Length: 114
Image (cartoon, rainbow, N blue to C red):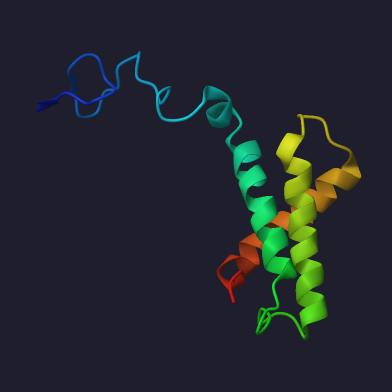
């Protein structure tokens, strides 16, 4: 096996082994890594809010009009708002809100554009 020395690695390793001290500590704050979904939710919410407020030229194919599309976008926003700072315990209602919003986000991801 060939040996490579990577920038963040302090020792040479084979291609398929990772040293114990390898870390992204210089790339991202560790709390953003541990709670990646919180970090992504905090990035997604303001962009969805801006997209919803945009005077759009159309709506996703699964919707009949702009009002339905904006309602779906709001459900996505609501889901990510709950995920921004949520702990591991959520009410049944919050879990349903998150599930519905994330399903809409996944299904319509490529339509979140104008």
